[in-house]
Image (cartoon, rainbow, N blue to C red):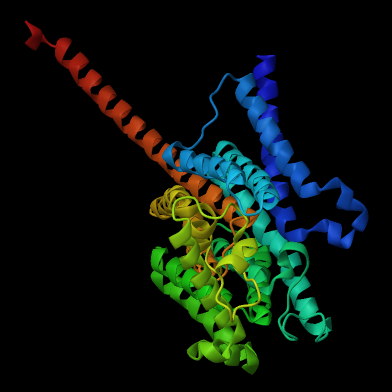
Length: 432
């Protein structure tokens, strides 16, 4: 009994560690307090959560879930990145990429094994929303206090570390808006938490505008459209979406709309041409190495071998699926599509649940928006991506478990009715 109680306590601590990790992804306390940098708090909390989760499974003699076909595809994808060191054009980079992806896979598996109730799912999503306020503030502060030398292209705001790229700042904040809107729209949400979520929505939207990320804007638009279509109370969801859109129209600076209009003439826009060159490189890699690509993380290092003469600057693939094709070939793409498609489908499936689907609808919308952003960016190594996929898988598993419990109760009720009817019949004179 004592061993079982210890296992339960480990599970609770693992959940708190995982929730803390979710907030730290956005808060980056080491930026504000440099003395914390050596502690590597994000790695510490995620590692603690994974370790305690595994210990709990040992303590209660429970098998660890690998999430069926979806988890198997992720494990196979990770194994392929490790194997790609053997044929990579830059084995050192591929080795680093494989190690980082292994960590992200561990985070995903921890999420699906620890987040087992609707309350836990909402708590981790809430931690993401709360932490995002810090990131949004960092981007907005850079916009107002940065200089032409510190801003990307002289005007695009960003923050630090993973958020130093304006596109990554935008796509990671794009996740937050539908999650926060899901809390705001829920009737049971307290007014205090609703106010925090509204603040997170406003700051995230403003920060996305200041990044001047076209993909971020499109992703946010798609995310809110998906949420509005999936939400049960259509009028309220449409009104919230219209309020957000009106805010964009009224408060986004003229230069934001001007940059979005440059998509119409890609030949005059260096950023757009960079994407065209990257896609050409992907095509040439695919023709040369169709099955296994140039090795995990090696796209930019293969650039000189495959880029057209006029493309002297090496870019990322600017599309996550093309990045996978270029680095891990069509074999890698099959594994990734099974994983990503099943995770996305899981979120949409869970969003149909009448009782617990409110959070899943926010997750499904966030996934739609994030994947749209990744069609313009393309980063295999993104903790936000795997956390989002993990939340989607957890939401589906929670919804399925609730459905199974409800069906079991119905079967038990029917069985009881049959037994009661049978007992009444046998106890009457009709039996004679």
